[in-house]
Image (cartoon, rainbow, N blue to C red; front, side, top):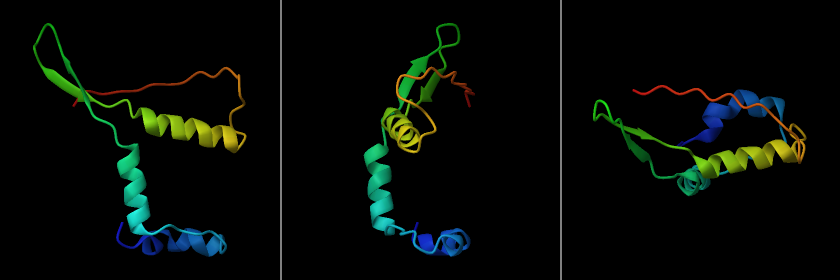
Length: 86
């Protein structure tokens, strides 16, 4: 995060008018999107699993998809959900 320009340099060369926020701004955005994990205890084994629905991030992604025309308001979409307990 310290130097976003270093990591994005190849992409930015193709889009010279694209502005990149400072690392502090990106970190603040990540913190705002962070949500607490939810713990689930399996009845049979008693194992505890943590998962995160990332609701704020999901809402942002849907808004971006609507704004860019990749989704339409009121449209119906199949969503694939994959998970793996580690």
